[in-house]
Image (cartoon, rainbow, N blue to C red):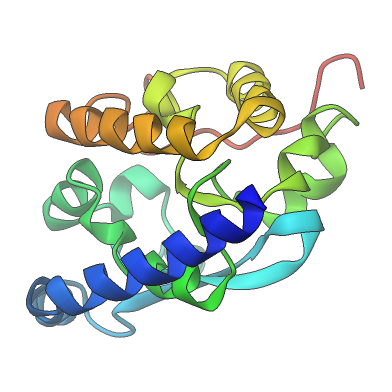
Length: 202
């Protein structure tokens, strides 16, 4: 029953936010197109509930700058000042409201990560896919990208075992505080977050 309630709330509030924030979304779309070029929307395949692959939408925050060999430069070299602002304010995440409306994601849940990580999780870590991925989550309000992958996955699995509607509401309010403080956006010494290579015991 609580899963149905959560899905109904996701549909209602994602639709309300899309309508209310449409002016901001259009402005950001225009600015991103001028400053970063096309495509404005960054699309990437991510695993959702039960590992089912979906296309996640975000505002683009990086350029396509390449080296002489035609390879993309490191994230730190491609992340623009405008992109940093989008990330620090989490405005780059706004297009994910459409993922929530479609049912690919929820407002709260473990963040959807890269498809190539699927075979790198331990059996316990893979349990993060027992629920829909979220726009925010328990790991995001407890360190975001500033904590290790292992800590992040422990928090994700803990959420899977303990989530409730009231707990989700608490996480949403905590998220607003994290965004306001702009904390944990980047891992130490990284432009974003270092790649998860698997577990040492594996």
